[in-house]
Image (cartoon, rainbow, N blue to C red; front, side):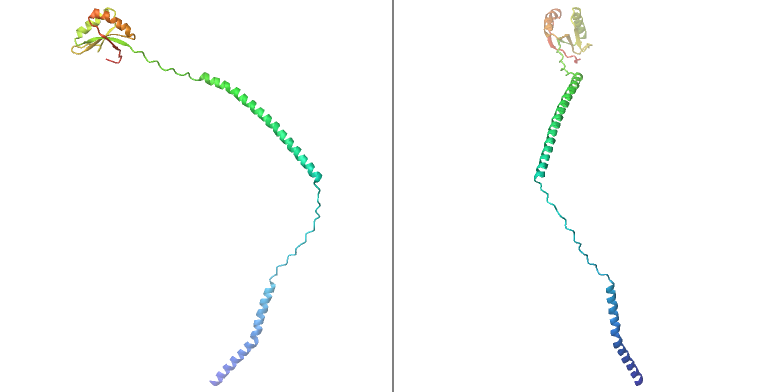
Length: 209
């Protein structure tokens, strides 16, 4: 057992010695490889600033030329303003002539409209009131018929309401109608002499039955 232990111990010592000897070389090799890899990356090239050639700038005297340019611009502006004023005057005259022509053309249209315009309707005249003489009311149909017959024989326009007398019902006897109240008033005397009935002038109601 002791010999085996010794052999193992010797082997471990040998391995450690070899590691101590060769380990630095191995580590140095890795460093060199890493340095080589870093060296392979291209370095950014430096940009060389190019010098621009100096340009010779010539100074120009604008004394006389400036005055001539100013005079030229003033004359151009004057001609433009003159042309503008002339064109404005021409356009004003054209607009005025156009307005007059439109007015002259519009006049016949107005006359035509006036010709075809409907005439104002006049208010309808109120119908004149008519009058009639009411002689009385009777409930005897025979007396009513006899009275009407006598009046008509003497030329009076007599009528009854209702138009057909009935015994036992009141029937009104009238003379008329006429639009002249005075004319009817003048008839009252003759009617009174004929029938012994004076009667009275009343407003005629055509709807009354």
